[in-house]
Length: 118
Image (cartoon, rainbow, N blue to C red; front, side):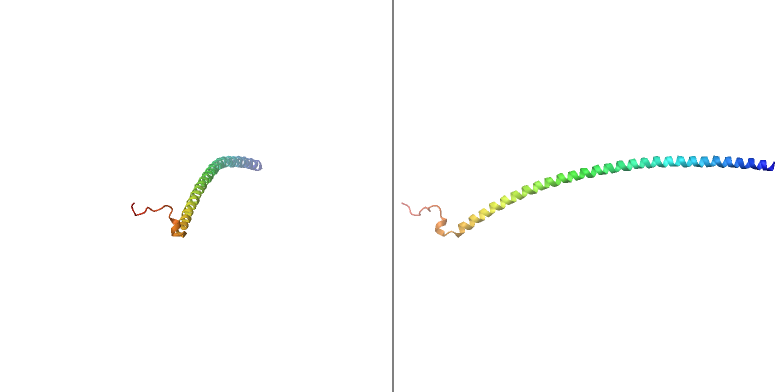
């Protein structure tokens, strides 16, 4: 009978252990599901954040490209105005040098009125 009581006791212990093992296993399964859920949520948020960041970088790149294009146009316009201005200035210097290098008699284009009266 002692053997019979021992085997019943061992069986009850096994059942308790099986029940506890099953409960622990269920907790691990539940914990894993929660971790996967949390990871998926975090992954969604990170992915959305990077998408927003990519969009902002693309927008900034577009704005900078457009800004540099406008700046290039303004610089080109300024360069043309400066080139035209320097060309006019050169022509005026050339005219001034030409008038200075002519003989005195050649510089007068109109006849001077005489001081004598008739």
